[in-house]
Image 1 (cartoon, one colour):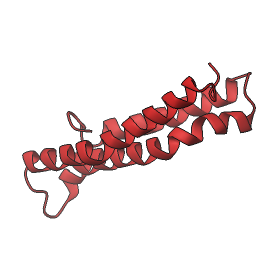
Image 2 (cartoon, rainbow, N blue to C red):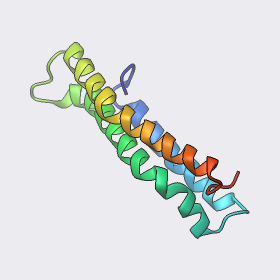
Image 3 (tube, rainbow, N blue to C red):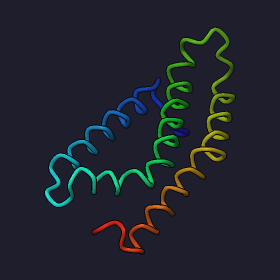
Length: 112
């Protein structure tokens, strides 16, 4: 999101890759049922999904939006604004998701 967006290509590829990988893991996993898989994903996903969607959106805004905006501003202005969003919104949400997932593993709620 902050370093190199390549006109929005990197955020699109990571969004598609994340969805494909998560879907493949859930479908091929033999141990947990659908309910158990949801119980493992939902608690930390509550924080992780908004963080990822915000990061993807800002990456697209910074990359592709720079090319198509009426008032694009400078590259440095977009870089500065995207870093502010990352450090004030995305990073705290990802840290909360990591804490929730870590607590679930430590308490034995999440197997594995």
